[in-house]
Image 1 (cartoon, rainbow, N blue to C red):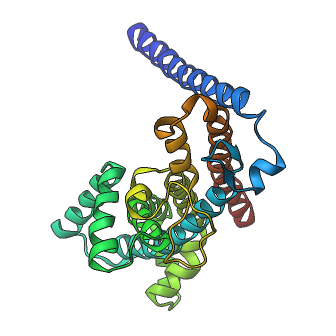
Image 2 (image 1 turned 120 degrees about the vertical axis):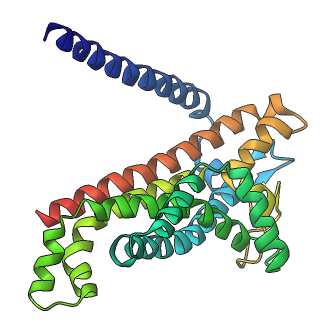
Length: 283
């Protein structure tokens, strides 16, 4: 008994120590970015285009391009991912083939993002002739986000007790009516949370958009989905590693990093608030 208590005590402290280490690393990371980037943030920095080889001006085209490509990503990942999860959990016969599909989806979640970028070049840029564009980048990021969306949505659906489905079926509802009225309202908070977290990850990715549509610098804003675009992650990557005068643009790079972190954290917070409001509405 004493040995069991000692193991539990050490286990709890190991968990607490792990959390503290993670929080300390994140705090150091955020503090450094805020300290170096806050002085750069201004109205001009957020609303103007870069000038003189990105050594002056702002990052508005990169913010605009990031939002556009994230919207395209959401239009693919949300409906396709959620309906795929509903089919797998509610309609598909549980067989070895279904197990193999689930295993493939889980493995796709761990594929490096640069592989998705190369796949996007082959499929969307070369085969489908979309060119290097917002559409190609958004669809590539959508494919990268799909495994996250499907997995999170399916796990959320599994948390709804079977009695909810059986009760509706016993009253004469069809299977889709039972899912729509008794399952989805309770699973939706978890489904949306996983999806938004996947979109937040996609908004911060560099490798997939680097090959499929993001440009180093553009003199104009994209006018259609077939145009190239500037994006915050790629803009930051260029200024931090490829610029001819890295020392001069370093403050602007920290300002860009701060804006990108705020954007990603904003999406994460939106997921938390959305989940809280939907759950509260169901109580």
